[in-house]
Length: 391
Image 1 (cartoon, rainbow, N blue to C red):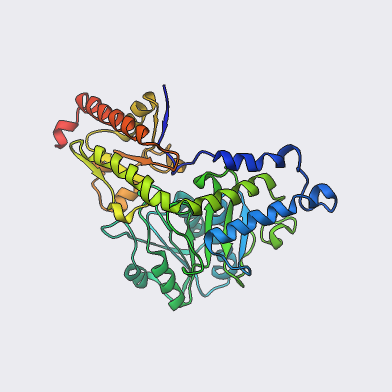
Image 2 (cartoon, rainbow, N blue to C red):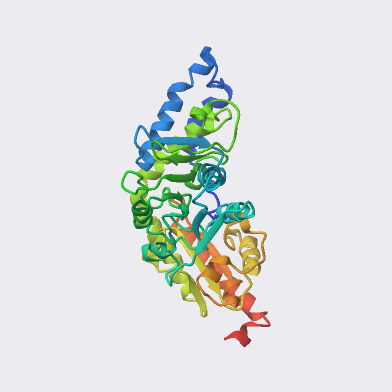
């Protein structure tokens, strides 16, 4: 059975060219880059090239910083805890403003900071599932807000937030702005030269790079207390020996992600819409968010009368990989928090399935997956004790 992978918002295949670029740095050029001998210094050109690709990929300037870390989860915690130590604990600014639909690593880090005495305001989303500039203006307070943290694109719905407008509101009020761009890199343009965010985070494995490496952009001149303490790597911003092989892979993956944006917006979007049309042809089915407001690869669908977990098992048995939402929260059986924040009824909040494509997804896979989804919906509704009662 040929398997079909439609869970690319959870992780992506490493592009074969990325894997090939990484290979020499495992068993041939394996020196510690901080060593002074030839084994260490010979990896420096590859590291510089990788960093140049990262800077170019997000439009960072030479005097900005990109801190290499393990993933965006680490980067997000670094920003939130760093701002807590640098600003909130010192006072008088003691507030973080974020949204009700952030990734769990942001929401849970904020909850931890609340336990330390920080005030956190969770902005609601509007009917389109996003936070607009007007909502931020009503919640930001120049005298007490230390940081605004809003994702660039939602990991479950794919909805893209108006980050430029939100960052401009922050600038007007003298407040720092952070954006988790994990689900945006490689899907929509991300340019910190034109979007005035102060901090931005990303993970390589979301754009066909390796797992276990990511980056934190820090705008020039900004202080941020390190999360990890030890050596002087990353200019003292993040201790720990840099994983050269993974850095090389992430740099190339970033360059390729930027180069493939037009393909994402045309071919991947067309395939996504093809699958979405097939899903919406199934009765009593809802897709969250208008197509034009979402990343070109993402569908969050709800099938009334069907438990999301039950459909996931059906799809998996047929070789189709999808998810009930964020992979980082996939063991939770609570109602989908994004649905709850958008005011979608509780019954539908338990029936959501996320399908997410990549540039490796084919038209044949989409057609086969659509047939599997329809068969699953028909089978599960035929044995459902609740479907007829909720119609």
